[in-house]
Each structure stands twice: as C-alpha cells, then as structure tokens.
Length: 88
Image 1: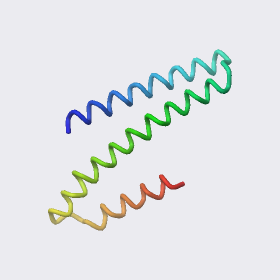
Image 2: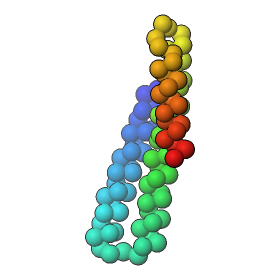
Image 3: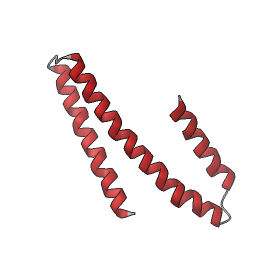
C-alpha cells in the first residue's frame, strides 16, 4: 500500500501547486474562465485522491474490523456519513 500512499501524496502536492497557481491567477486578475478551468482540474485531483483513500479504507480498515472484534457498526456509520457528504 506504500505505492498508493506515495501516489496520493504526489497528487495532493500537485493540487497544492495548482491552488498556489490559482491564487496567482486571481491576484493577476486573469480571465475568469481560465480560473474556473483550473479550479475544476484541482477538484478532479482531490476527488481522485478521496476515492483512493476511501477505497483503501474499505479494503483495509473496514475489512479488518469485520475480521476482528472491533465495532463493525461504527465503521458502517463512518462510511454512511461520508456517503451523505459526497451526495450533498
């Protein structure tokens, strides 16, 4: 899973760079559509990382809780809360 961690970290750093670029674009009073396109590109990266993180959580943490005596209902509630946030 270390490879996924490094990939996600790299994507997050890319998103951070894009946000820095967005700040400069706004400060430079760049064209609104260009700014919007850059915002959408950043959102796409963040969505991708979020999907990877949640997938890994399901495959590791949730599966582990079902294999042990951990509170399975709590893990299910956590996922339900995230699903509600994603649906908003």
